[in-house]
Figure 1 (tube, rainbow, N blue to C red):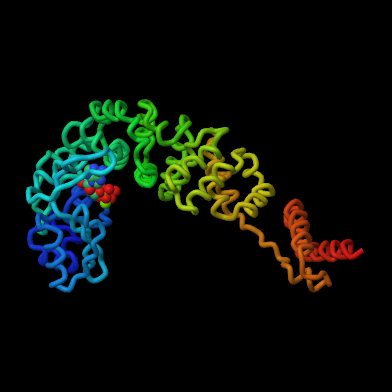
Figure 2 (figure 1 turned 45 degrees about the vertical axis):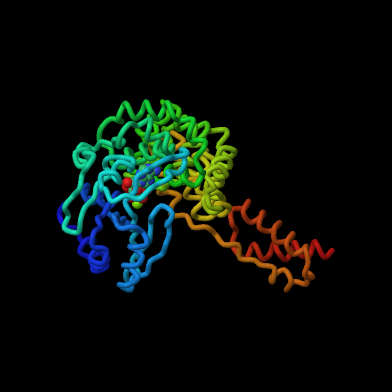
Length: 402
Ligand code: ATP
Ligand code: MG
């Protein structure tokens, strides 16, 4: 591996020198080999965690014991975090968590990793340790379990979802038939996983440039149904991915999930998934709002109606709803509709409680009622000008006072 810019960064150089015996591992090596961007840097070392901690402290590097039970210490070098993990081997499992023992053997550590492409190590000069044939698999675009798929899945059922996730991102071959069979056979184990772990993998899967073929395979073997109940129709998501390609927008996991929800039961399923996956309130609200939005494209193609929706949903919710409506239909003219309403701006209701009070209404629930009545009238009449609205306000107040 050619030395990468992030390997030459002063923080990286400093940390690697302090640790002495340490190598980069996992996603960072895989992505460097693939020429893909690298986000977080994971480091493996045969040194036991207390030794790592001591070395870091002597060098004045902040050591945070983020996962000390499984041997992970986060080293913060001049503000940049690195995960440093002691080599491990798996000794037992309950299908959700591996119980680990430390080792000094790189090959043992490689064998407990999930896929060959994730089991590569590189030292600071770029020399690679490849115990399981990961380089050849990366070159072929093949996602292959380290060892026997069924055995490895029974140790941790999340590996089923990770298999599809990595294939969606890096696969260029057909899905490995033996692995696919193992996923089908063991899929009932998915219910035992925590929702957070499922959410993390699935959202990453959705954020692949085109997760479509992978999702279809997951559908065929019934894995998709285990995590997204009722998902059957993949066409809307396929169109969404095509739109991202055409518009140059980044894939949006929550929106793509919304596109996969079964028509007719979208809202219920959204609520179910949000609870099961323990989505954040922000993601939950967004998913449920997207699931509840009308899908009839005619509502968006008409600027008058579209403006009302925009006002009610806010710009972000409106964009979600618009995209979902577009992909729910087969029309080819989506670009015209999209461009037509994307330039709309949401009007702002110009009246507040103060204006009502200024006309002699006493502070109390009546103010809210008047505002609400006025706002409804204003929206239904397509946002008439302020002067008309003020006139209407005066009339309403007068009526109330009589
Ligand atoms: P990404 O770029 O998406 O972060 P990654 O390869 O870094 O990809 P992580 O989930 O961050 O993936 O995990 C880091 C490494 O830890 C993996 O490359 C893999 O070697 C190992 N690993 C993570 N989860 C598992 C698991 N469930 N079973 C076995 N090995 C795992
Ligand atoms: Mg990672």
